[in-house]
Image (cartoon, rainbow, N blue to C red; front, side):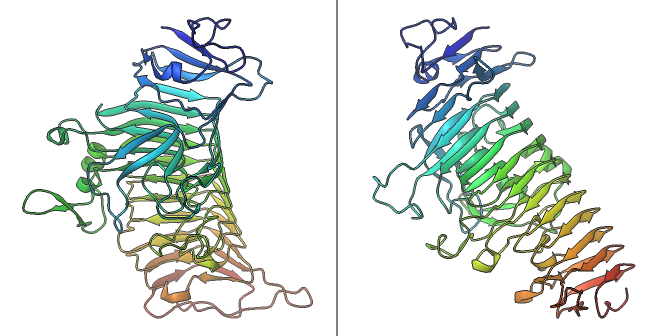
Length: 489
């Protein structure tokens, strides 16, 4: 078990690096190593590694994780990895990955890349990956801009990658591609590829188990803030179709939307915990878990997500111009609790979402004890036909916009025991553009009209309680400041 020290202040790559008085000078000296169980890589506080990247190799073991962190005076600045477009590697899912379709391979710049590294813990680093000029001849919002990541964690050829811990990281100013959702593109992104040997796709399943992202600060990153779990194995989870030659066709059969326990446990990410993070001013979505089995997302804060999801910036295509704050995609029994989401942007400028919360094509999503305010697209969306067994309970929303509850084509939603304080541009249901055509049981909630008139008094308002095509049951709700109530309440 060896400790390696790296200092841009006093180091020299000719040093052994195993003595804090004789540290390495650059991250390339670490990249040349194969780390062993129990090894540590410590960067000196106050060091700046400009134009450098950290792409270590090796894996830890149970009880002997590889640790990457900081040393030096606690009051000195965190060691800073400033990739500035360096650290380019080639990402390839080795399969189509859904969507329009979503891009599934290409060159990526990553400041910290953990590829097939199990039993690794990273903490106390400052990480950036700026676009410092237009030397590529492209505008920053061109479709062809290279994807960038602050931290990318990849499972590919090592089977189940266990025990990845990211703590107290300050990831900011990552100028990735505005559009690409599922490349390694954003602040912190963990994803799984098919193995490079196609014969081992089923015998050597690439996935994550025991993932923690805790107490990180993520700011000004594109496209994502924090994302965990996207996987080439969606082709198995989502009933992917093959052609007569056995090739995946990027067509899927989601059935009734439910996800079998055995399927998500075999191919998805398990034991995922995302807690106590702050994500601000990201280009797209703040925090998303995808293809995870019973993930827990708690005590996180999102502010001003979807900064670039508007028609004047996200202008090269209309595909994928949607982003919300904190939500799951195709997860089983995801639990979101004690989170806060503020001011998700641009629902009025082309963002098709803009909500605080979004139960999206998942099975058994639960939101409880969360708070939202100022989100331009509303409070919660139950998104489309495959959002099943969704529950929204014991939450508080204040002055979200457009609509508290968004039910486009979803088959079920149970919304109960919440408090919705509705400002001037918010209805109980988001009914613009015929979005209220789903199914919901809405009961034991408090809806408060907080729209003041010219004299400061609340003006009673009417609402469209049963929009055309909707299937909403209102039961035992309390309405304050409304001129009418829904039929059947």
